[in-house]
Image (cartoon, rainbow over all chains, first blue to last red; front, side):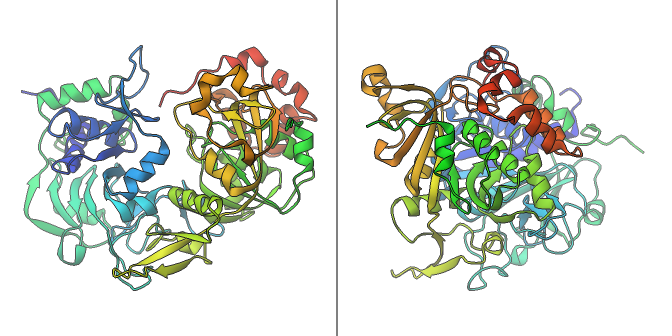
Length: 263
Length: 292
């Protein structure tokens, strides 16, 4: 019997699944939960994936988050940004990122809110999203599933491309490969008819109707909609090792338990 | 041959309206001593090309920037550069936002004297809205694929911070990642480097460090000795970025007259007293390199 677990820990285990069966690729988890998830994947079912120390070296042992306390990462290879771009452009990478806005076409925005000439809110800029999204598979982690993130219309700035043809020279999107979208409520993908968004698993105690109510565009139910599995004791032990100071507790608002308390 | 110059001599060779590329990456290895000398000068209407850190925010705050061409502008531990954010939200600067990799390709094209390089990056995204002049090109081979033609980003000048240089223009850059300093150097008409240390002859002083030479000396126009000159950014493997200083700087972006206060307190009238104003050379030398 595993110890009690948090929603963040459940989401980490669900997010790790993004890298299952994806082969020997550079796995980049941006942000604490995706990074722990990639480490968990590597230490359990996907030892083949490549990870970095967050700076410029490849490591075979995922580097724990937070203060190193004397731990010195052991480089197995070199991955400066120039080679990160090479990895992106040759397609041998799978990133998990957190868009600020995402739409029904799986387009993502981290650039800005409002008019690009004079944004209401300047965010990060498009960063590597345009190149990533047209070169390799991308999964998403969203800690606050709501209509503010999964918006009704189109994202304010298309940073990562999706299945909309609107901006393409010939109207046809190419090379778009969306993996899974893990949120604080469910796991989704964009593998419905015409790349429609589908719920493939619901976190314990969450209903499809609740997810739909928090999403600005229509969702489909996967053929067999599952309950997101509980973390195992082994997984929880690895998560403790990868995040010894509990940075994951600050990611999902209120750090709720993995199984909802009865109302 | 002696390429050694002073900060003021470099700035005297720059002109209003120039396109200036700046090496480094976010709060890492920025030629800040040279940037401060620009802040103290009358230069204006600059187009700045960078993987931006505090230099971009400062040049915006001081009204030096007309246009920004950037992969990002970030302090890393403060994800959005605060004065950049302020300038953007005021609509005070023209933004040619690029994918990080497109900036590589634009610099590569310029360095190799090509008009453009073909890529898929940017297709389907709003990069083309930020850069309405971008065109596509059709592959002349059987695939016939339509690609984005990333135009060459030619620089009038590049400003780069290195670990060591000699008077001939040879340089060595320590640290785990060369970033794209070499591309900036090659894309530029003239390249000026600031160095932690300047020696007469690299081959006589540091022959064992030749692998950390990132670009040829024929690309280097001028060399300035600027010990600790990357502060408040990091200079591998010597010192880390100054978290406390950058936090104070960031907080000033939200304050009335904040930039003026920063300028008077730290940038000041000349570079000579700068290190004393930020807590002394020993303090800067002891700043730890960040752990990601």
